[in-house]
Image (cartoon, rainbow, N blue to C red; front, side, top):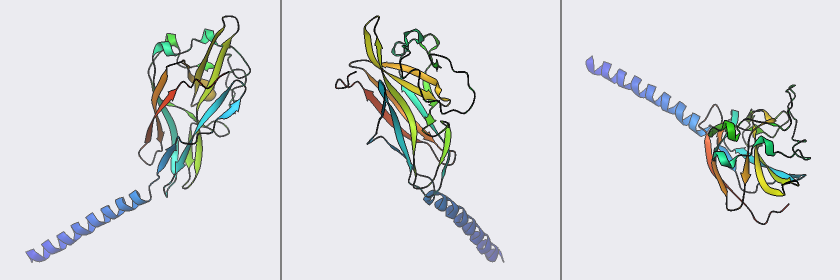
Length: 218
């Protein structure tokens, strides 16, 4: 009788373990597989600069739901532009206004992190390149979505004759409220990490480096 009970209990345990493992294997095989595609970035040119969007692909068999794009940037206080420096050229007056909400529009565009209000830029939300600049989207299996990464802008102050390139990073509010503006001068490189975070799979992380290119001119 005791051996029979042991046999039954062992079979139940084996069945339970097999069922649990089967679910985990199925979940693993059918999970979303988010890929960040830095290669072949196609800039969107406009007056006095260009936009950079990153392609995000889902190579899995399940939707990557409520995916957000987060960024960490290794920068110092002195790397940031002061709001008093802005030149309201065609671009600064014409950043995308995809947002449908009635958000007060300040000029220059509101900058969340400034030299006098400096903090580390860690896991800050970007926006997606869709109508409304949503902060999170669903990425279907086999599809590709674009994430607004930054805008590369040329600064030209005719009064002081000061010229340099700078980077504008959007926030989860889109381009109406940007995270920050960072100067990109000669011999300077900007390092950081990009995170794509669905709510049903672990984040995908890629490091990036942005270097000054002397071949780019105004």
